[in-house]
Length: 321
Ligand SMILES: NC(=O)CC[C@H](N)C(=O)O
Image (cartoon, rainbow, N blue to C red; front, side, top):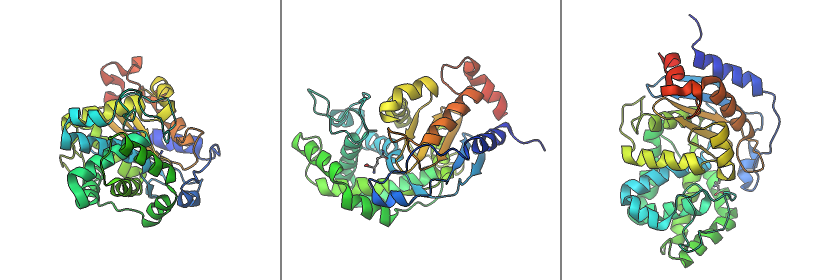
C-alpha cells in the first residue's frame, strides 16, 4: 500500500533535519542540560485520530511552557474570561519568556504564555483547587494526551532549587495584587506543571484534541470546553512563540507553543496536532529544528491560515480523505 502523504512528510522532514546541529540545549534548569541533543521526534495526530510519526517520537521530555495554554484554558473554564482577564492580559509582550516586565497601567503580565502570566494562572488554579490542584491538572493533561502522565521529580527539584527568577516574578505579582498569598504554593504548582513528562505523540494528541474542538479524537473524551479552546488557540497564535511570535505567524501561520526542553506543539484548527522534539534551542528559547520542521511542513502542506493552497483547507482536506 502506498505511504500516506502525512507519513511521507514526517519521514522526509526527519531525514532532512536529522543531522542539523544548530542550537544549544537549555542549561539554566541544570537537569535539562542532560538532554541528548541528537534526540529528534516528529508526530502528527489528525483530528479524526490517526497518528503519523518519525524518529524518537516516544522519547519523553518535560512539557515546560507547552503547559501554559492548557492551564490557561483550565483557568478560563474555572473563573470565566473576565475574571482571568483582570489578572493576565492577551497582548504579545515582544520580550523574552522570562521577562520581569508587566503591562504599564494595569500591572498585569502581558499574556499567559510568558512566565509571569503562566505563574499568575497557576496561582489562580491553586486558589480554586487548593492542595488538589496538581491532581486536577495532571488528570486534565492526561485526558488531553489520552494516557496517564506524571511529573519528572528530578527536573521539578532542579527547577525548584534554581528558579529564583520565577520566584522574583511571583513576588512582584504578589506586590501588585495579581496573585494572592500562597505564592510559594502557586510557584510549586507552576514548577510541577512544567515538569510533566510527555513525548511527541502525547503533544500531537493534545494538539489534535484542541484541533477537534476540545474532544480527544482517540478516546472520545470531552477534555476542554469549546469556548476555552478558542481562547487557548487565539493566544497561542499571537503569543505562543514568545518574541518570535510575529515571525512565526508570518512563516508558519498556525497557533503554536514551545517549551525549553525542546518540544513544539502546533495546531491546524479542525485538522491536525503537530509536535516535534529536539532539545537544542535558538536564542529565543524555541527548538531550532522544531521551527524548521514546522516552517517546511506549513509550506509543503499549505497549512498557513492565509496560504492560497489553504482555501477552505481544501489541499489538506484532500490529503486527509
Ligand atoms: N520557556 C519555557 O519553557 C520556560 C518554562 C520553565 N519552566 C521556566 O519557567 O523557566
